[in-house]
Each structure stands twice: as C-alpha cells, then as structure tokens.
Image (cartoon, rainbow, N blue to C red; front, side, top):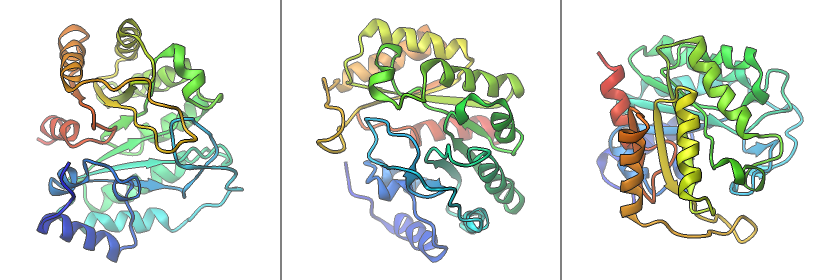
Length: 281
C-alpha cells in the first residue's frame, strides 16, 4: 500500500493536530490511511487507550482505567466539525466496563455536539457491546448518529478463543438487533476477521446470523498478528477469496454492501463511500 501523502492528507493531518485530535488511522498504522484521508474519512478513538477487556487479537493496552475520563473530550472532538475536508467521521473506543454507563453517555455527548456544529457531517459509532445493556444501546441510537457499528469479529466456534470472555457471540448479535429494533431506518454495520481458522460453513453461518439481526453493511478483512504475544495467523486468504465472499455476502445473503479484501478494516473508505451515497440527500 502507498504511504499516506499528498496535499489533502497533509492538510487533514495538520487540522487534526491543531485541535489535539489523534486518529486510530495513525496510531494503528492502518494500511488504508492514505485512501481514507484523501476522501475525507477519519477514525477517532474516545475514552483513552486502556481497555477493560483483553481480546487476544487486539494490541490495545488492557487494564483498569479506574473511572478516568476526559470530560473535555466531546468538545475537543466536536471541534473537528470545523474541518471542511472531513466528510465522514468514525468514533470508536476501548471497552469501559469501569464506567457506570459503560461510556455510552460520552459517545452520545460527542455525537450531539458534532451534529450541532455541522449537521451534514456523517457520523458512525463503532461501539463496544455495552454488556448487552438496552439503556446504553438506546443512548447511542437516540444520539443522532448515522451509522451504528459493532463488530462480531469472528465465527461462533472461535469466539471464546479470540475475544475476551465477557464478550459473547450471542451478545454482539443481540446488541446489533436491538439497535435496529429501536430505530428501523438506522444503518447497522459489522465486521469479521478471516484467517483465524474458521471454515467456509462457519463464515456463511456468521453471515446468516448477522442478516437475522438485520445488519446491512459487512466488512471482511485478513487477521494480521500485531505482536508475537497475540493469536497466530492460521492462513492468509487470497484476494480472489475475498472477492468471492463479497459476492456471497451481497448476492446470497442480501447485505446492502460488503467491503471485502485482505487490508479492509472496520472503518474502510469503500464502505463509507456506499453509505454516503445512501445517507446524503
């Protein structure tokens, strides 16, 4: 992949820095950063860099934040609405099981301020499972966001191996279904990593389960081992396989859109491009 460069990328980076905003795109060294930034998409992680969960695929630090929260963060992030080059903003976060509302209110405040300053800015929230708590999901659904995202991550048989024990396959599906039930016209989105040892039949079952939960958008990408302490890659899927899975997702299971490729990640420009065409009138 080409390194992120060009006037549009430099300008967006400068604007973000001036406001003290740091993106997951840079922190995680995302291979799609150049493509996304050139098109005005960026992803910001809320509520710090310490996660209360310990998933075996993720390199984010795990621990106890002891209730710490930057109460000025929503206002700081909302200042990003002034960046005209920014068209689509994804908000994500670590899990915050240590907070009374698990961080739902912090998300909602940030989204409300962004929309207040710039109603045309498309905002996606890629959220934790909030322990399956209905009131937390409702807080997000009613915040004014455009897209509700929550990642299933992997197939059911691998869930206990890949994810923290507090995250369950059923709970993730329930959260996605709950969001759609609360607001029928809300766009919902999820993601699967491939290459962890899943079978073709299991991928199909996960797709069927997501569609049963009324999920509309799916992204499929290759799992890459972040450090030697994390889960090993079982196999590398070919670009041709990813293209085949895209067709299966859209033509066989009826997803509105599927972004599928080795370097595709949850927040990927191809998916956002589709969503812009649907959401902007």
